[in-house]
Length: 343
Image 1 (cartoon, rainbow, N blue to C red):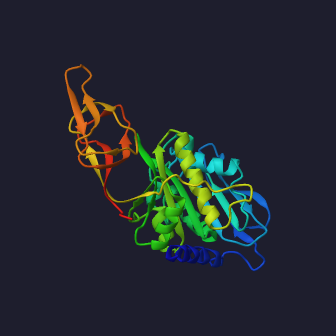
Image 2: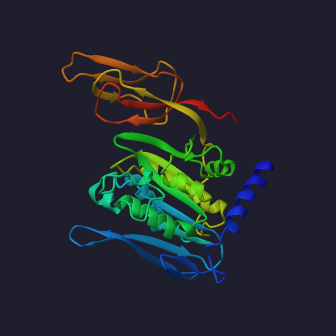
Image 3: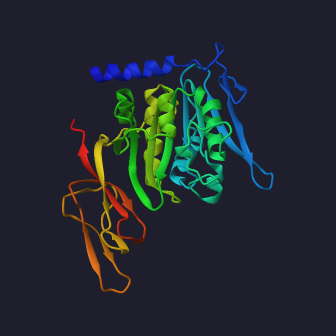
């Protein structure tokens, strides 16, 4: 009963926080008015290519005629993180973004520049997710962050942001959430990714900026960059549906998927690093629970002379695997949970 009352309080707070909507239930975004019970796409123009070709970011907006919260769903802050883009694409394609009440704003690709080049960064070499809230007259990434935070984010009552593991590191699907925000931790449980990582907000990140502005946000991580993994997309879409259902926004044609098990809450994890350079041969699947001393991989040289067995440093779940075929001594190769929340 206590948990049920807490979840109700979270929903009530979100529904009451609609100051960005006018009295006539008109949504104002980027200087344009979006009426209730409408579907529209607004192009966010931030810069041009060298050829003077406009680079526009489609902002896809679906509004119900019934007042309610505004949920902002984003992906592609890092241009090479395709799994997140695929999650938001499916939400749009399946019409999950048509709300029963309130408004849903989807931006599948925030970093269009990186997406075009299959690159994590902006053309200025900066990581967009480290320059928030940005500056009006700074670098390209900083200017974009500034415009996004000041012209788009203010309309949102709740945010879902989808990410993917960087480089060749494959993340088990999980939600990252600040443990100090108890209400947000409860929403992470509703999203119910296989894992929930309790981690503080990083300075300069989108998540940290939302927290400072009092806007709740869940960050989903899953898969690795420059890859699209069906299982990861399913977890992201299903979690989003559960959140929308909890907020009373999921369309009548949909039913929130019932999870097979509860999300595993992670307090602490550690990285295992390669003790030798060579070819990396992974022996276990992502997400596996391993015992201390269990064989995780082998590292060999190209000549058939050396073979090193990599064993688990501790008991826990493997939540990140380096899938690079070649590693150097000291490279992070596995991330294993160290401490879980006991429930």
